[in-house]
Figure 1 (cartoon, rainbow over the protein chains, first blue to last red):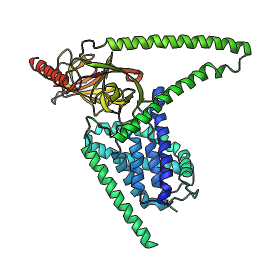
Figure 2 (cartoon, rainbow over the protein chains, first blue to last red; figure 1 turned 90 degrees about the horizontal axis):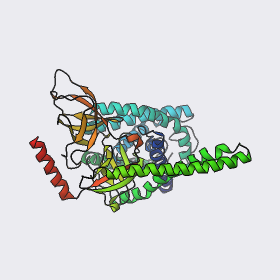
Figure 3 (cartoon, one colour; figure 1 turned 45 degrees about the horizontal axis):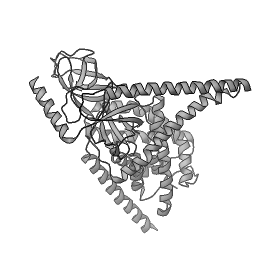
Length: 175
Length: 291
């Protein structure tokens, strides 16, 4: 969906507020239940939503804003996620006509596939930085459950973000 | 119309290239040892970290209310009253018990390292890192409490990590479980030197120990004092696995940290002034040469 530049700021602000709430819950409540080894990367979900459903020349800047907000809660920094996010959004822009969101199952599968792309890009960057393949393997075993949980949550959160960004319920993306 | 679309896609391409270049520059120049926060980041950290503490405390209260009151609604009025009384007393007892335990923990923490000549600041854990790729803890003390970047963080059981990033009121600890945290350590019994790195889940790897060094299971691992961050002789953990091949230069050693990170509630931050840090490192270097 094409978005006017003026409409971006309020929707982006609300999206970042939602991200803050989700991150606070994720970093404070999950560890109480002993879930320290796994964290749900809600920033990935938001960036995928933006890539799937929003068409704007300022998409890369929106990704920077989301990643910068995410970096408040992690030492990961904004850079790596931004690189992955921008590359994935470029890929999505080429595949737009093939992607559909007409059912929850399709949303879950599409989100899972693009999370896998995200994993490949961030892992490649980490490998260049650390030169440690064992670390990437461990990251993969964490990625599997985290990404599955995130994909299962995608239909619910996408419908919430549809309302925030006023995306029409048209099923086919990019129209 | 077509012209506008072309302009839009040109603008998008330019923004994408600029953002990607900035991010790649950021990744390549990033210092992995320590992270300085900008004023804006510090402000956001100070605003959001109390929320984390608030959410934890609300969660505990809600669980307590559900456990002690909501589940008793179905009982008779008298029972409800009696149970409430009992619950209240139990709550008081529980709270007293918690206070006693907390007191014991804090006393133990403060007694720990009496011979370490550094300022000790007690802090509470308020959250973990939002990415599972990093083993980072957030504490409720920051620069305004006297904490400095790269200050050592310990408990009475041993080393936790060091201060990696901080704002005025909160700080992030890069724990020894994180792969980017490298600690210069010694096997206490054999004085074999190596580098400890975070490895998998709750374990660390001790690297660069010569294959001929007779390292055994349950050998104590302590800090060597080199590296300008950790004081000498702090307990780090025990050797949990040793694999020695008939070839190669080094051996494979896994270390079980002595700190139970899953039950960590309070920590002590050891703050040294810069001159003292240098003096201690020179001392450690002299001692390691003498050994």
